[in-house]
Structure formats: C-alpha cells, structure tokens
Length: 299
Ligand code: AMP
Ligand code: MG
Image 1 (cartoon, rainbow, N blue to C red):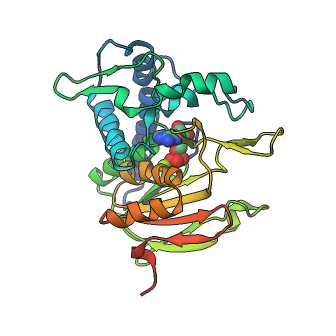
Image 2 (tube, rainbow, N blue to C red):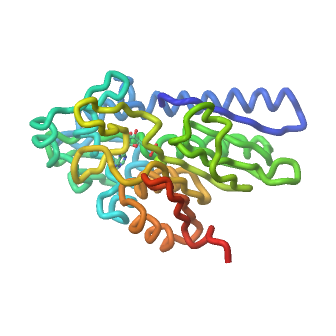
C-alpha cells in the first residue's frame, strides 16, 4: 500500500498479543497482494489487464470494495471515482512525472464510473471503455484497518489503534480516557509529528485524513502542487483544500469519504457530510481556515 502500518493493542496475555499483532500485519500484506495496482499478480492488476469488454470473475472482497466505491461515486456525482486511474496511472509523484496535455485529454473520457459493469449476481466486472483502469487507493487502507480491527476483536481485544497511512481505527478507549488524535497543519514545516492544529478526544471510531502533502511534487513550470488526489472532471490534482479528516464508524466509509470531500471542496463537502448520519468532517482549506461539520461545532 506504499504506506506505514502501525498497530497498538492491549491484551492481558502477552503471547496472544504477539500472535494478534502478527495476524494483523499478515492481513495487511494479504490485502496489499490482492489490491495493489503495481503487483502484477494482484487481482486488481489482473482485472485492469483483462476486463475491457470481457467480464472477469472477481472475489467477494473486490465486489464489496467496487460496490462501495460506486456508492460514493453516485453520492458525490462522480467526485469519488476509481476510474480516475485511467489518467491517474500516468502520474508518478516520486519521479515527478505527469501525463502531458495530449495524453490527459485523450484519456479523460475513460474516467467515468458508468464504464464499470459490476454484476453482483454473476460476480463479474467488465469495463465498457477501452482505456479504463481502476485503482482502489482511495478505499483500500480504510478497509484494511477495518479488517485488522475485526481480527483483533475476535481475539478478545477491547482497546487498540490500527493505522495505515492516513486511515485509522480506534477500538475502545485508552484505559479510562479517550485516545487523543491530532490533525496536523500540513503547511507547518519542521517536525511535523509534533505539530497538531486540532486535538480530538476519540473512542470507538474510524478516522481518515486525505491531504495534498502525502504524495506530491511541485511543477517547476508554474509552481503548481501536483498531488495524488485527482479531480475526475479534469484528470488533474484537486484544488482548494489541503486536508480533509472524516470521522465515522468504519474505515471503509471514512476513507473514501475523505477523498470524496477533498475533491468536492469546502461547501459541497461539508453539506454532504451533514447529510450523512454518524459522520463528521474537519477541513483545512488552502488559506489555512478550518471548517467543521455540524456535529463538531460547539453548541
Ligand atoms: P486518500 O489518501 O484516502 O485520500 O486516497 C488517495 C488515493 O485515492 C490516491 O492515492 C489514489 O489512489 C486514489 N484517488 C485519487 N483521486 C481519486 C478519486 N477522485 N476518486 C477515487 N480515488 C481517488
Ligand atoms: Mg481517503
């Protein structure tokens, strides 16, 4: 998943705790091998190679993730769209590469979730446009932390935190007091880990942050920040927001929702979250202003 994983847990038996940690890490690796677009043998890579016009049998997990992704696409009028990868595939942030104008324009019509033909009865997926590619980077980490949470819970764990990059699940409290989770101001330089703009006391929740500082480079020609969250309407990095944090019950919702709200921008993003019971949002816009959904505004 190209990110750091961490698991912290309490258990009365040290040996069981070690076993559960190992199972949690093994689950992360299993999902990476299933969902990575870069691992040629992953199910996702296979689908990207073969699904154009030809329905491919896919696993229950891929069905779940694609179905959930389509739900967020419909909810946001396409702000969340896993076919973003039709253009997104040609960005390489580490190598400072982006598709040229011609390529971006040529491939833009392939970004459209309506090209995905998911048949839940036959358990197949087909692409209805020849240039379509999908990528589950906007939902896989949240799903992974949910899976690890389920493994820990089935082993009797009541208190834990699990995180994969910007996506975390928090189980229980921290021995009688809430876990304190900080949202950092991405434009604060220096020792980022020590700088938080907002501290949230949290228990039993999922929390996902999408930021334009995770994978990016600056285009020397125009000073633009080229980052990993793509506006499906343009095939270019979404603008106007620097970070979105979403709180909710499960990572497989908070993860895609954070990406969705990032693309939608402040007003439509907050309006969407306010319509969804059980979810809250903190958005830092590109001027540094912080916006909260209704559930977090002081009465
Ligand atoms: P996150 O950090 O959770 O916001 O996820 C960012 C990742 O989501 C990117 O690295 C891409 O893999 C993927 N992504 C980027 N733009 C979109 C989009 N518009 N819809 C769905 N997934 C996206
Ligand atoms: Mg996300």
